[in-house]
Each structure stands twice: as C-alpha cells, then as structure tokens.
Image (tube, rainbow, N blue to C red; front, side, top):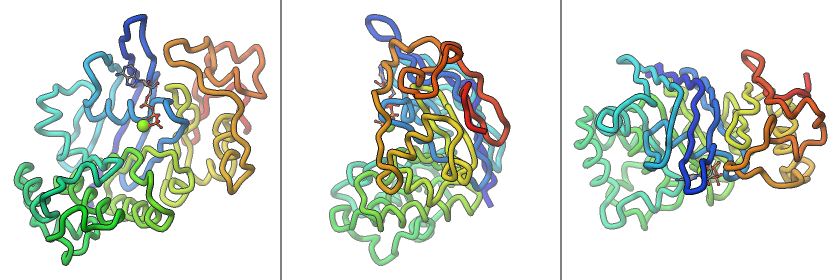
Length: 309
Ligand SMILES: Nc1ncnc2c1ncn2[C@@H]1O[C@H](COP(=O)(O)OP(=O)(O)OP(=O)(O)O)[C@@H](O)[C@H]1O
Ligand SMILES: [Mg+2]
C-alpha cells in the first residue's frame, strides 16, 4: 500500500495581465485521503487546470501562487506550493506526482515503442522497476509493448500514458480531463483503472467535465465556480442532491437528468462581483449574497447563504 494524501489550504492563483489581474483560483482548500479519488468539476474556465498546474509548479511566469499544499506519502511529506522549481522537477513531478495528460496520443512519442518510452522514463527516474511491471500496473498488455502509439487503440494509448505516470511510484496521481474524447466504454475502462490505482493507496485527483465518469469512480466531488470551491462532499451526497444551487444546476444540466442548462455565463475572473460570484445567475440570490459566503461544514462543505440542508 502506498498511503498517500494531499491537503490543500487557502490556495490562490492570480495572473498578472496588462490591465490588472485574473483571480483564477481563490482560497481553494481540498483534502484527498489515502485511497481516495477526488473529482474536481465545474464549467470551462473556472480554474480547475490552474489548480492542477499550480500543484505541479507548472504555471507560467505571470502567475502568483499563495497558500499551502502538503503531499504526504510513505517517505515523508512535501510542501508543493513552497517548493523550488529544482525540487519540483527533480523530486516531485513524475516521482511524487504522476501526471496523466488529457490526450495520451499527443504526449506519447510517435516514433518510439511503448517499451522504449517506459524504459526511458524508468531510467530517467532511477526507478527500481522493470518495463513489464510498469506496464502491468496500468493493465497495459505485455504483448503490445513493442507497438508504436499509432498502433494502439485510444484506450490502450491512455493506459500507456497511465503506466508512464505511475513509473515513478507516484503518491498522487493527477489527471486533467483524462477521458475527454473517449467513448463511454473507454471512459469506464479508464476511470476503473483510476479506481484500482486508488485502491492501492494512491490519492487520485481527477479534473473533469464528465460528471457521469466522476460518478462511476469518485469518492468525493469538489465543485468549483469562478475560482472558488463552492461545494466539497462525499460523491454520494453530491449525486443524491447537492446543497449548492450551482452544483444542482450542473447536475440538472445533464441529459440524463433535466437537461436544463444553467442560464447565463460565468463572470470574468478579472472582474469578479463582490460577494458570491454565482449570485447573478442564481434563482435563490438575495441581498445577503453580496457578502462572500464562508465555506461551512466538515465532511460536506458548502459556501452558500441559501444552501439546502
Ligand atoms: N497565463 C494566464 N494568464 C492569464 N489568465 C490565465 C492564464 N492561464 C489561465 N488563465 C485564466 O484562468 C482561468 C481558469 O483557467 P483554467 O484553464 O484553469 O480553467 P478550467 O476550469 O481548467 O477550464 P476547462 O474546463 O476549459 O479546462 C481562465 O479564465 C483563464 O483565462
Ligand atoms: Mg482545464
């Protein structure tokens, strides 16, 4: 068992832009326990990838990151947001955190076999692991190791990418939209792989638009809106009926539910309204909502003045 966990507290990311700044993530706190899959969901542009890239130290130079993010694993802990680029590149990325890219096909080397790519990654990381075991960890079939990426199905290419992400025995597996563009059967295959990885004790953070995929695999769901976590709850509670009106809107927009989109569009992150950022789109909004709602709750956290009990 790997026994890893991640604790993010008050993480904020501001991008300096010519006319001011973009509040891409504000006061984000998340807990991800050993063996847990956390799905981070929310509309396009709400800051999900910024949080993921921030944890990996991969934000561009105009980003200012504050807060704390402690990753714990079998050999101790690392504070990710305070770590130097040197530490992140030599000790964290690929080793403590395995990144599963959105599109495996574009990340795999086109003219090298999967065996060669795994061997190279293992040697770069100095990992004590052979190619066959690295492949087996991601259920990549041994008899396909000598194939090139273009000779693989989408699902097997994604498994190869997962095998690469796990080659360094990462504590945390971070996947940003790992199932975009895959058909339903493949989505199931890939998220089930994340379940198996979590069951070995890894913490898995999956950034996704796909609420159905998240329902299949996530233990917890964190909903982000305009850079803030508005609800963070056990997946059962989320899918049973979320407390935040935005989270309810997201679920009701699903074709298999009410198929009713949330009216309006998210605010510009460079011009956020005072108070609750969802207020202009929210049917429950009152004068109270001009004040920022504090997140409340322990296992089920909600930031809304009118949250359903
Ligand atoms: N380098 C940058 N400079 C200024 N703003 C940026 C920069 N990078 C990202 N942003 C802004 O940060 C916000 C959050 O972007 P992010 O990519 O995290 O969204 P997302 O939730 O991952 O969306 P999607 O679901 O489309 O992937 C966006 O409004 C984006 O314009
Ligand atoms: Mg994104």
